[in-house]
Length: 275
Image 1 (cartoon, rainbow, N blue to C red):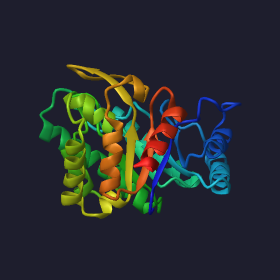
Image 2: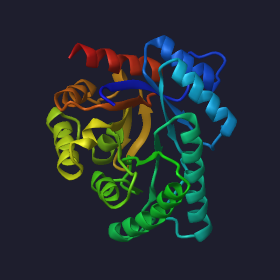
Image 3: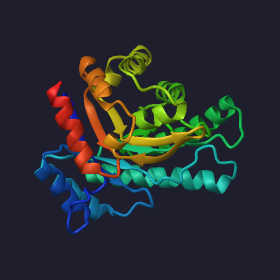
């Protein structure tokens, strides 16, 4: 990937009917570049349907990615919940591959009162089994644990870097709104550059040449993320973020998760092109 692509998390709201194939076509008609298939409540495509989406995306020059269901927890204390999380991520990745998507974003889990290091070891071991199963079955996708928006959730930048260094075919999904909400800071050009420096230092230049990024406005409090907001209704300094991405030559995908997804995705793309 040699440029920064902009698109929506899910089917654009202006799509009719609200179907995945029509959503891909609508993204293209709007002048956007990519779309994330939202499996947040469950994997709703089968193999044949996923292959059909791959064809539509190719014909419309749209890059697809996938967001796995929200309820995964690779630090679950109950064995059946852990196995369910592994199975659902595997299923998401398999269908993603049929759809032509190269990245599968997921929420790694919660600390559940465990010390950070203990939770990390659990997540790494549990996720490692999915990585190995996908490798054995020759399912070629990148699993992307997402930076989390609450201190109770696993997914600090350091944890994502550690997972990337320790497991094959794993790379971060950097959600800048979550990163901002989790700390209440991380909202300036210098801080955005600092994060990109950390990624490059620990993961190499390749990490910046194929980033997967989530952006939205966000409402937050002492416990972190509350809800997503339109960019212009929030305090996220998205223009500073875009400048940092441009100055560091970042390539990859920027997925907009705001309530006004296509309007804000277009705002991001147009703002980026003006820099």
